Length: 107
Image (cartoon, rainbow, N blue to C red):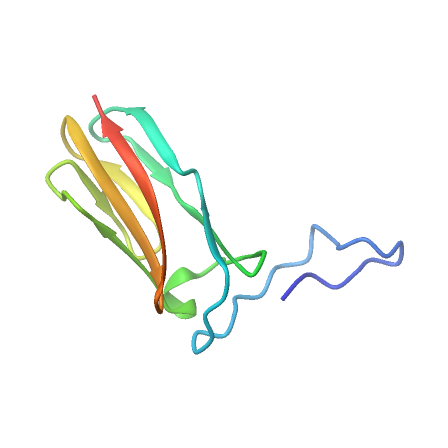
């Protein structure tokens, strides 16, 4: 879903965006695709879109986040990555059968 158009016909950026139906999966995309130069204790957020709409509450939209190496990087249910120690990890973002990945490098 997209924000309602403003009187000018353009989407109103101040309008909150609605999370997609958790029972429906669509075109999943994430940013950033990679994160480099994080240091232990630092956090970064993954932004998620389904069918071009920004997902504000990933858990309610049936989106999950998993880390390939939790001793290097942990990820919350909301998509916040926490750097733990030096190394690399892949964060997998999934909704149904759709997946995207984010590579993470911790220095």
